[in-house]
Image (tube, rainbow, N blue to C red):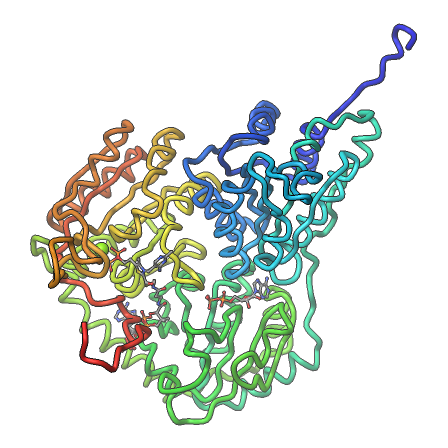
Length: 568
Ligand code: OXT
Ligand code: ADP
Ligand code: MG
């Protein structure tokens, strides 16, 4: 080449980073190693926030909840085979929960993998990912990186959101091409999640069913929270006058203290309603599949609003399916209702309100208990007050009793502030969710964790301290899974559900420079949480809970299979 005519070059590393940036992806959650260490370094140098975790599953859960909170795909970056598999649980979780996420994994050389010759961390990752996500792609040539990422983004966020796998073999990163051609090969995705308008006939059919109901109910699910159509949903629910029941992560979409909220009258409304409108909630196990004892004797009609047409009739007949994105559907309802919509029958509203007020009154004295060791209600009573005073705090929650009782006790006041175990009831989301919630929103996070639940992601407290995130972790330490009182009747090993008694999880935090507190009464707990939220310092509070206070599997003990035999 003649001097001065040297070609400007780019390579796979830079094209991946440029493609991410072009599409507004400014945060990546992952664990470094061969072959993606330099990709992470270069991405960081290029201004992308690269958060480095201690285990890929936690990075993956972080990416999944980033997707839920932002409506943009959360990105998780892993190394080959074992790193990929560690991240895959979270990708499957994202898909199951309808959260947009992209798992980008390095992989080893195709020609060796395909002949099964034993490469470093050899695995046919694309084939393994496929059944566990919405879509899976592999990029073999640098000039296809732009299209590959565009396809991944679109697949993750359009229609029903979910997890997407993007396989990038090690060799791709070093591939060189002309810089100008490389830039041209990148794709900025236009209208990644297009609005999907419901058919006017479907809107009319649904409103006709709702209008003729004597005991209508609206169930709001986490799809409604995801949609970020908060004002429209609130206006629709209020205009309809219908009682609403929020699923766990839909709490706060309308405040739990709203006069139409039926959260504290759950059994009654499910049994007695004659028309049920589901908005972004599936009739899966969490709603007893729409049938059986939970739903009572009275015949029911279901209206369902969902972006996924195949969801309709999945468990029971849907008499009025409304397929579209929730923002568009709810706006169409509001338009079609006109000015003279008459609110739901007042005797029904009175029935729901009475049941709700009775349940709230029944719970109130339990929340005042200042007993030590604490029981769940005493401890949660303190936290409930804190959330009422600081409604912007993001509340992350996992465990069994710790989860189920917190869901009922701690009222939520704003949308998307409660993040929990979701559709699978999975343990391990705690620290990953907390980190992403703090990073994506800048808001303080309060994570309330069963001692078992915390153990699944506990090492990430180092990550929290390293990035100095405003996260306060409260561990409900009852010495075990469900309870700390089980004994093994046959030998010296501890029972399978108990942990070291009197553990001090707070000391873990001190090891990394965070604040650790041991709290033995609701007053101490309250002081420590308020101090943590005021200071914004990474804090872990070991809340000592009576080991006998919990029940087997919390509120879902009925799902445990029973042996008919009398043997141990
Ligand atoms: O209407 P009625 O009268 O019925 O009353 C209801 C409401 O109206 C009323 N209510 C109120 N009253 C007064 N005031 C207010 N504000 C109020 N609000 C409501 O209260 C009742 C109950 O209301 P709720 O909660 O809405 O209704 P209900 O009937 O419970 O709803 C049904 C469900 C199914 C929707 C609900 O229960 C639900 O969402 N459940 C989710 C349960 C779940 O997902 N659990 C997690 C999994 S459990 C288990 O599998 C665990 N594991 C195994 C494991 C897992 N999961 N993952 C992995 C990767 N590996 C293993 C493990 C290891 S849990 C677990 C660890 C547990 O130990 P921890 O130490 O972590 O935790 P502890 O138990 O604390 O020790
Ligand atoms: P929950 O657990 O709160 O009951 P689910 O996860 O079961 O909620 O249901 C969420 C539903 O919301 C899914 O069926 C999904 O297809 C749907 N959904 C997600 N986002 C949207 C959206 N923007 N518009 C319409 N439906 C959506
Ligand atoms: Mg426990």
